[in-house]
Length: 244
Image (cartoon, rainbow, N blue to C red; front, top):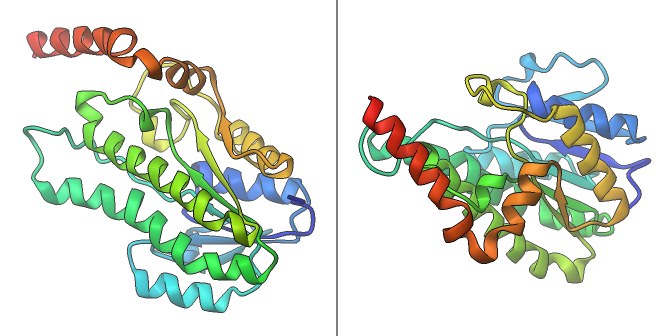
């Protein structure tokens, strides 16, 4: 798909990876970028058009889709990580809150904008996923579940929307240098690099973008994940639990 001259919507575009997505699209020649955020005043980039958009408000999502009839690229970037473990600690409301944004929000935006993309020749639907779509750490078990569900949904959307000419892209990365991963002391990929690769993937017609070594290694290990991935995860979890 030709990114140059396109009209894009980025959800969660006020900071971090979302802001980087908006800039990467503009750098690639997008004619217009709508920057969705719960508070449009938090969008400070003067080159984008702020749009009030809370992906958990499905009626608002539908209204925005009706208003933005010129969109040809949708980037589902909005996401939250609340640190909800599967067992213990938080009540289920925290688990539901992660799903409301990371899965149901993505679904709502995709459903609302699919007809818009079809009317504009097909376009592209890009879902920001994670290496945690394929592997789960106990302390991030629910977040991983939301991303795994979103990955499965992305594959289903690709099949369903192919006939209308919509390119559906799943973007995966490990730790990204944003506020969400600020408390984790590990090597991180810059959000600008993830965004650059994703936009290049759109232009190349790629259906999947593995933005870093972490995502590439985790996906490659999937055929034997219980033997290659989880022993180290189990050891790390047991060590942390015994030290607590």
